[in-house]
Every structure is written in structure tokens, then in C-alpha cells.
Length: 333
Image (cartoon, rainbow, N blue to C red; front, side):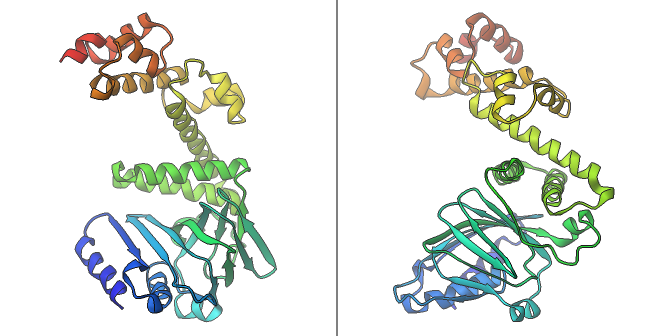
């Protein structure tokens, strides 16, 4: 298979570094696309048995991110039935669990007597060594994270022999936390040290175990993982909302369904306060705008307003304290 060989060749070229692989059926002749797709997915994701009755040419795209414990696949393809049968499992058992995140459209899952339907933002946590079926009436568009069994199983309740399929709705608080943590991992993994990436995946495993059933002796580990994820979510929201001069601990706590006390307690993990972090984010934004030619038409005062500062004097004083020069002097250098 040409596509399979191309992926193998690409693996050889980058096997010593973080790996990003992209593959598409576009370069495959239409009659062979679905067979090629099956081969690549079985090789790169899980051994599966896909079935398709449509006669139109099949289209599919696969994007893989792999670095250390990071193992993520973005998959978009025409709808079809996908089965992981007992034969597939016995032939190719997996040493991972998976987190399926719906990006667009709807999909359904069946595992034993369990039936789940996912909407955008919903998550499925499951064990690929338990047979399942999945399909969609439209297009598959999802992100698949794989977690090493050796990382997750020590956190789970001892009586578990297989992890049952769990749906985490986008509307659940835990779903928002897992979504936010996964997003941060994918956004920042390239800048993390090996130890930092390992800690980040430890937190992810704690979040998943919280949903799947923690072993009693791991409850404190699960609580700390949840707090770390809550803090990350707050920090991310501050980054996205820092330009709003009305942003405050009270408004942030209300939006994230936290008490004001709980919000401030989260910042004990960061060794700074809400306002200190907000000021840092605004100063960094002003720093970037002052160096950006696209904003050279704005006065330094308006740069401060654009970064979220309400008062010019506060902006000038804190900028000089942080960068050793007033905004105008800094821009002139």
C-alpha cells in the first residue's frame, strides 16, 4: 500500500523526535481508498473492522501527534460502521485506554447493553479491549487520545476487570475540565520538558480516574489532579478575557461555577493571586502590541486600554516596573 509505506517512511525520518504525521486518502486511487484507510487506521490507531455500503469514493484524513506520553489522533472521514470485534482484540490487544472527543456532528457507540450518542464537546472514555461498535449518519470528526494502561490502572478501583464505557457530557463540570486540560496539553506540549509532560499526563489520568472510579487510597491524588485542572481552566479563561477591563474574581467565579473562596484557593497552587496573574497577562499583551507594526498607529495610552488596563497611570507604572522602561521608551528601542 503506497499510503502505508509513506507513513512508515515518514516514521523512520522522525523517530528520534516528537512526531507529527499527516495522511489523507486524496493521493490514493478511489477504488482502493477504503481498504487503504482501514490498513492505516489499524496500523496507527486500533485494529478495527470497518464496513461501508456507499459506492462514492471514500475520503479520510488522519493527523497524529506523538511525543513521549502524548498520543493523539485527529480523524475526519466519511461515515461508515466501525467495529472492534473480539477477533480484533485477540489478534491485537491494546495497552491503552482511549478518550474520544466529538469535534463536529454526532456519533453513536454501542458496547454490550450500553448505547451512547455524542454531540460536539462530548467525551467517551473506554477500554479498547472490550468490543464495541460506532457509527455516524454524517461525517466522523473527532479527536482520539490514548492513555497507557500502566498509567491509569493503578488509580482505578481494584475490583475493576475492564473499564466500562463512560460518556462525559460537554455540559458536565468534569467534561469541561477534561476538555480544557486536553486542549492545554495539545497547545503546550511542545514547550514542556519531559518531566512537565509526565506531570501533565498524571493529572489527565487523575481526571479520567475521577470519572471511572478511583481506588479509595487514590482519592487525594484525584482531588489534587482536579484542583490543578481547575486552576489551568481559570488561567486560560483569564488569558482569553484579559482585555475586558471589567474582568474580576467575582465574574470569573460565577462563570465557572466556583465560589469566590474556592477561586482564590486555587491560586495558592500558582503562588500568586488572581490580580497578579491578570496583570502579568495584560502586561505581556501590551508588550507584544508595542512591538507589533500592525498597531503602530495606536498611542501607548490606547495600547494600555487594548490590553485591558482601565487607568493610564496604572498601566505606565506597572509596565515600567516589569520591563524597566515606560511604554513609549520601550516602543522606541
